Length: 415
Ligand SMILES: Cc1ncc(COP(=O)(O)O)c(C=O)c1O
Image (cartoon, rainbow, N blue to C red; front, side, top):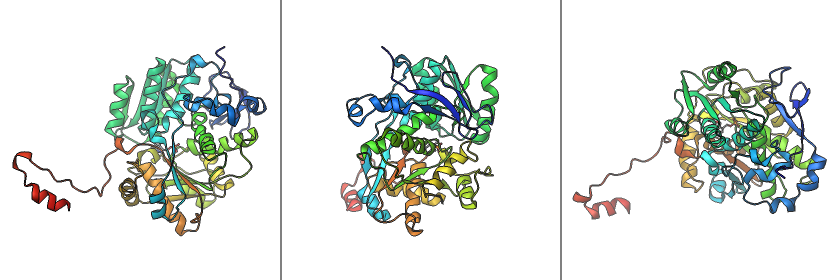
C-alpha cells in the first residue's frame, strides 16, 4: 500500500566493485572508504517508469522517479517541494557569452535555496527509513541549511559543522531550524574530519558528501529532469561548479540509468567541471592526467561551495569528465564577481558565486574551442545569490531624504 515502487537491489563500491546489501545503514565502502553507489533492477523499473507515467506524477517533485530512488515506504519520504526546477533559456546572456543556445537549470528554486535540498531530501528520508534519528555533516553552508530543514521535518536531531566564515545567512537558517551548529576555524576538510570523529561518539549518522550512498541519488534527479525537460535529448555540454562533485557524479549515473530504461540513447553531454583558481584540485588532476586529485593547499575562493580542497569522489568526477570528452576549467575570483553582476543584468537572476563561476567559464571554453557557437549548453545555477556577501562591482546607490529632496536633481541624475 505504501510501497514507493523502489527497485533498489544492492549497493556497490564505486572503486572496489564489492556488492553490499541494500537495506543496511551504510557509510562509505568498508573496503576502501570510497563511495558506495546504489544499484537498481532497471528492467523492473522500466515497466512502470515511462515517459507517460512520469508526466502523470505531477506535484511530487523529484519523488516522481521513485523506482530509481532508494526509499521503499512512502511514509518515510520527507518532501519539502524539492526537484522539478525549471530549465530556463538564457538568450541574452547566451548571446553575450557566445553560446546562443544557453540554458540554466534554476536550482536556487529548491527548498533552502540550493540544489543541496535534493541530496539531503533523499539521504535523510532513506536514513530515517533505516532507523536513524540523529544526523551530522560538515558543510560549506548550503548543505547545512538543507540538512537542518530535512532533519527538522523528519523530527531528527541535526548537528552541522561549517567553517567559521560560512555566510551569516547560512548560519542563521541552520540555527533557526533547530540544528546544532559548530563553527570550525578551518576549511570544510577540517569540518569533515571532526564530523567523522564525532559521529560515532554522539550516535549521529554522518551524511558527508559521498560518504553515504544516497545524497548522490537525490542529486542524480537533476540529470533525469534535464533529459525529460528537453524531450529526452541530452544537451551537448553541461557546465557544473564542482566542489565535492555529487551532482556531476549523480548526473553521469543518471544518464546510464536513463539509457538502460530506454528513455535516452548512448549519446552523452560533454561534462565540464568548473573550479576557482584559488581551489582547483580537479582541474589540476585533469590536466595532469591523474586518476585521483591531490588535496589543494591554502584553498581560497568566495564561492564557498566549491572551496573543497579534496573530494572523496575525485576519481568518479575525473572519470566522467574524461569519458564524456569534457574538460575542467579554473576561473579567477574577479571573473566570479563580475559574472554575478553581469548575469543579473542579463536577466539570469541573482545567482550564487558558484553559479557565476560556472557561467564565467563559458567564454574561456569558447576561446579554447571546447564549446562551439551552435552547442546546446546547460549551466547549473546551483543556488541563490541572496545567501552570500554581495559581489564586488555593485554601484553605490544614492540615499535621499524625502524631507529635503530636490526631485529635479534626482531626475537629472537618472536620465
Ligand atoms: C551553490 C553551490 N554550488 C555548487 C556547490 C558544489 O557542489 P558539489 O559538492 O556537488 O560539487 C555547492 C556546494 O556546497 C553549492 O552550495
